[in-house]
Image 1: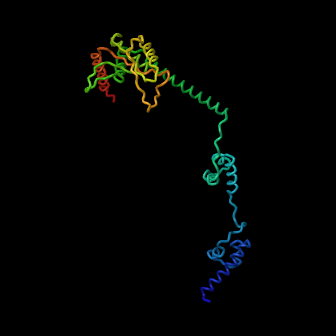
Image 2: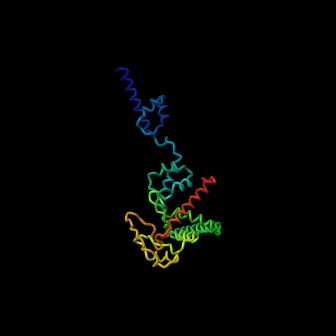
Image 3: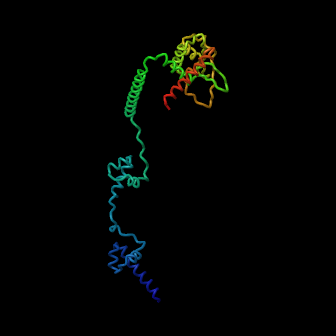
Length: 287
């Protein structure tokens, strides 16, 4: 028998003894002392594949926490609630319970829904009160208007919303379109300041086909102080079925078109006033 073969036979004989001792429940230290094998690498090779006896395993300090965490998760607790009770990290909790189903979110009771609705209604009332106080305070800041202030305000209003002349399309006429009753009232007050006679004004409603055209005519006629019969024929706008209109309901009354007859000279004055406003702002250095 060669030396190498003899060495292999010795190892196998030693391994058989080590395995037998392992199965008897001895620890690695006990096997080492019994067989006089003090090389840890060889010792581990001798018992490779043989599980350590239960009595040699160190207890895991977190086993109890893990078990309790799983119990709490199955009871419907959240990570925060489990962490509060056990005092361990959320990362550990996640590892321990990630295979368990998430707890169902509890449905709020009728009493809870009612309480929530009352809190929200109170919050809305508080917000509305703040809105109205701010608007009232701002309104008081305006106070009475002088003729000059109305001239400037009306000119700016017209230049923002009224028809304007273009170099490629000479249209020196005064025509104004808007859907806001307050804007219409300011505009008519401005025209009166400019000395425009009521006989020079014509009115026409523009409104979607699905709206109440007759009701809109009555509303605007009452606002401007003329009979509905004095209005020109209403312009009906076709609705695009691909779009969703938000301007619907009883408060939708279309737009009012106000035109001033023989308005070329007035239009030139309006454009001049506007240029004067722009020039005045520019001269003050306001950017």
